[in-house]
Image (cartoon, rainbow over all chains, first blue to last red; front, side, top):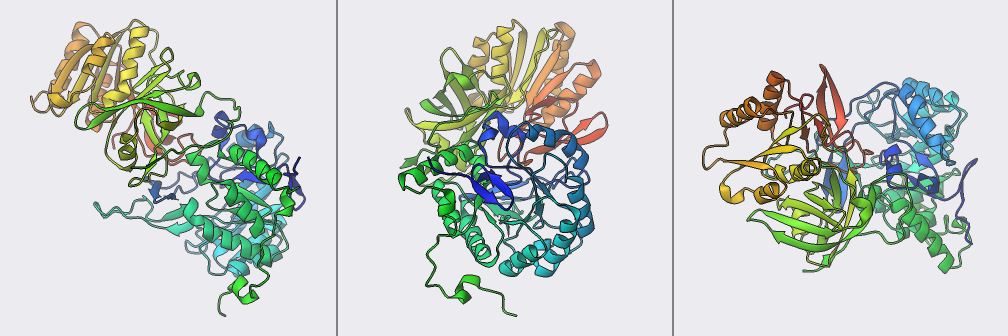
Length: 314
Length: 281
């Protein structure tokens, strides 16, 4: 018997596999047994009702996809009345993803969703917002600090900060989030991208640009997860392009204590449970007793710190 | 050409729904005419409890030249629990369907379904009328099968560019439908002629419900006729999809629900909607 459980701060997960926000909803219960997941992570909600972006909202590129869904949201009250009770029927920690246009609004919704039945809050500080001229909070350490401090004072629940691959200051942002009270980092959100139809010369997404996800994002998100795990004391949850058990193991070795699976679920809705079985087999056949034995086991002892951290020039 | 079968290994876990991700085996994959192909799959019983108008989300194979990534939604052309069979009629247009066209007998294909809300045939709807063009006929074919099972009368008005690409005529006839064909080549597919044909049916035998899919022109025509004669109708709509299950919010369209414009997911609230609420695009 191998030990699949993992620890994200004060929270114990039965296994390290959970969905990435935005690629999971109650609807998946028709295909997949939701009891088997390490945690449930909901799609980002905002305080107000939002319609979302114009279509097309998704397009595929070679072996990956771009999306610009735009966080359609039925609002926080609908979520509290309907979504939280649905997930509370499962004995699996519920992680609620939230976002807002300003740091104050963010703190308000954070307080609103800090209710019984919610195990942790994933703060999506890596989606566009108005206050910072369309840039996400997690683009810069200073804005990360501002929003995370307000969020921290708004809730006693564990806060998972979801970081952006669009910043050149990965480590500075990670440290800022940790310093301001984040309990874990989710690394990372999608990478800003674009695709154009060469016949019509129109952008393939209705919103011009969107986030890249899928296998082509993996090396980038893995690099970030590694750098973050090297820099902070809080747990790092790897997210980006995972579609095989080898991908999961790679993230764990890089230093992630758990992983989120997103776009791969669109290709194979059963994949999270399939990968869980494969992870167990992987550990058993290699006589690895526990998931935690893999975490951070990367053999990077010969690498210079300057190479590991690749910090932005001052 | 090498063909990579895409599937997940391992046991599929029990869930609480009627939708399943399953491996099927190709029975045949033949050209119907210059543009369309008919794919017949040997499918497990668990996915064959289908409703007309529902769809499957198909994991197209990867070939040396075609590398589709996301699944492709495809309306069901035929399903038979007795034969253990699932059929799709498709036009080869892009990367996914070009890859699908390479499948040969015995190849495996991963499908997810059945998905979505299908057509309704209410108990008091005895005289049904369907209007479709091109591949839209594929979507409406299972409706003919269901109408026959429920012992309802069905008139199928089938439209195409020319007679040689009119499809499924024999299929509709074998399912007991009365078929009326109209084509661009003969100059019979125009809206005014269609209006005349439908008004004629309403005046003669009466029409209790109308069904269509895929075309803006046909939608508007049936909306007008439906409003004039107070006849309900349903339309199957398409939209680009990613997950097909309702999670990603990619496939929304706008609907007019009693004056309020709402966004609904084609994969989940649809793909079949009321004709009166559908909005032209």
